[in-house]
Image (tube, rainbow, N blue to C red; front, side, top):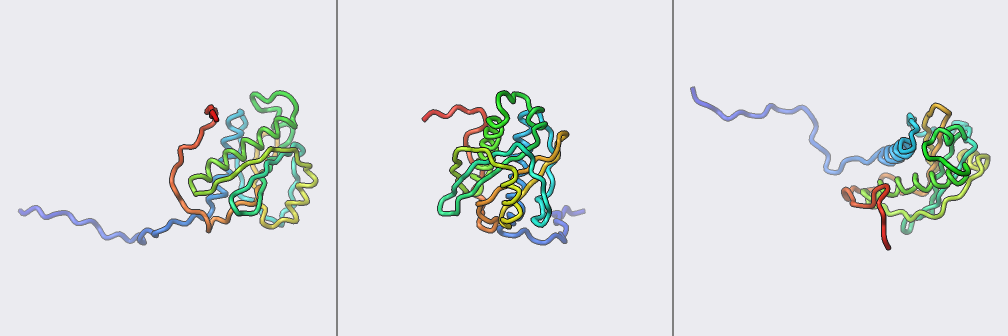
Length: 188
C-alpha cells in the first residue's frame, strides 16, 4: 500500500476579506473602557447596546465630562453620568462626589484614548468638568451624532456619551501600542 499525501478537505467557508470590517469597534472599546474603569473601583456593570437616539433617557445626577481633540477633526467630549449610589459603592472614593466624578471622566477618556491608539487615532484630552444632567439630557435629544452607552449596576444606570470621534469607516488597524498603562509613572 502506497502512502499518498493527505489532501485538505475543501472548505465551504468564504475566503477571508482583505480588510476586516471595523464596524462596531468604537462601541466595543467604549463599553470595554467603562467596564474596566468601574471594575477597577469594585463596581460591576453590565453594558447595554448603544441607546437608540429616539429613546428618552434619564441622565443620572452625578455627571462630568472631558473634552478632547483629534488632529483636524471637530473637538469632541466624553461624559460619564451615574447615580450618587454608584459613587458611594466605589472603593477608594473619597472627598466630594464632584471631584470624584471629574476624576472618573478623566480616567474614562484616558482609557478610550489608549484603546484608539491601535487604530491610528490620537486624542488630546482636556481638563474634566462637571456637566449639568438636565443640559446633557437636552444635548442627547438634540445631537444625533452623539453616541450614548448605558450600563446597569446594582445602584442604577450609568451613562456614557461621546461625540467627536471619527467614523469607523476612517479607522485603520495599526497594531498594538506600547502606551502607558494604568499606574505607570511618566516622567517629562
